[in-house]
Amino acid sequence: MKENRLIQGFIAQLFFVLFIYGMSFQMIGTLISRIILHYDIKMAQAGLLSSFINAGNFVAIFFISFFSGRINKIILLGASLLFFSVSLCLTSTAPSFGILLACFALIGTFGATLDTLVNSLFADLHPDNSSQRMSLLHGFFGLGGLCGPIVIERLAVYLNWAQTYFIISMVYMIYLIVYAVIVRWQWNQLTIRIPYEKQARIGLSDMLQFFVRKRHFLLWIVMFLYGGSQSTMSVWLKRYVETHLGEPVWGAYALSAFWLGNTVSRMIISPIIKIPSLRKIFFGNFISAVVLMAGLSSGSARGIAAASLAAGLSSGFTLPLIIAQFFEWHPKKETAFGISMFYMAIFIGFALFPPFSGKISDLFGIPWGVALGAIGSLLAAVFSGLLNAHLKTKLTTP
Image (spheres, rainbow, N blue to C red):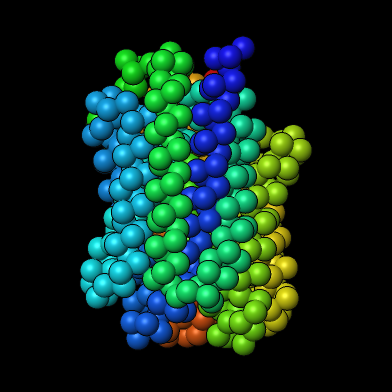
């Protein structure tokens, strides 16, 4: 009983760090207008900030692959917390734009490492009922995303964008100290539940082999498109409301509404709807595309806020369901491998969509750039439908 309580305490830590990671994930979308003014750059250049974060995310895949099986994941999570905090602190010095891009790449590398390891450790500790448990974990990320725009906006009002980065970096540093103390206290119990010898190494051949199976490839494409849609909304939604609609007060609320929808989708809607995961993903992303286009057509801050909420409600469960689907196909697979492969897809989506949508915004206006989020959702629905049809064909083929 005592051992179980100790493990539950460690799991609570994983929930909490994903909550604050969800908050810090909103920093670029919330502070993007201030950063643009500070550096006097265009939207396409500002989109590079997200691209460098996600280039760092991509590097994290190889970082995890190299150290997986060489360093215990519990220790590796602590190291990623340290370097993530340092990266945020370096950004808070407001360096030249070129160095700022490098700082954002570091944020991406160690933030993605943190995120992947939290998911992997949680899956190791809870291998059963993966779809509901993953949805709950990512619901806490969504809660952070819900609170993030409002909290960060208030901090930026009283401080500035750079000082806000410093405050968040200190939050992670304090968390790291608590994490280190608790892990040291629970080390024996944790290593029994997550034995080091079962943390398999991931090689390049494993990654290449992943794409050989059509169902893996199609599911990977769905995650890529979902990531593209999410990143477009996260980076540009607040600025769209502030600059195009002329409603600065509603900017943070519209972004928070999007993450409120994501949170409710993951924690409540996904467990309630008793249909296969791929059908949820198909209908959810299709509805998301429709409501986003309706919100953009409304031309009002309240309309796009309502559409953002509806988009989050309908498609927010996509990420945890995709990860859970892979674990249902391969229940004995090393958890870090599956999570890394699908995070690679979402990271590439996050790297490509914001600068592309920023360029479209510079050329044709920001509504067209934000509309790329709806297009990403629509295509995610299309490819999830293709995957569902492929699986049915496999089942009926003699």
